[in-house]
Amino acid sequence: MSNDDKPSQSYFTPTNFNVTLRLKCSCGKWNNIHTQKVMSHLDNDEPKLEVFVPAYLSLETQVCAKCKTVIAEPKELIRITKDSKI
Image (cartoon, rainbow, N blue to C red; front, side, top):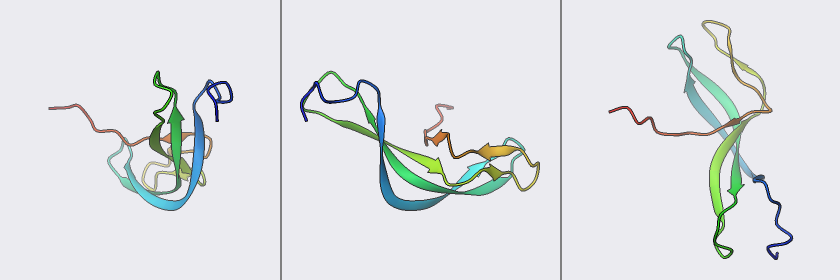
């Protein structure tokens, strides 16, 4: 694929990994979220280097079991990041 053929925006490559994530709601309850792992392709300056960032797509709308707020929706990506709190 040449540089002209690549899309200018990031795009996602689905994988065959169905993963159950545990996400903490703002009320403090840990919830299990059924997701599919995808690899997000990011644009960069070097043409020979491709950058993929792991992300997760929710398979269904997930609601907190305790406070009933929506935690994840299928159209939103979930990225796992480390907090910089020290």
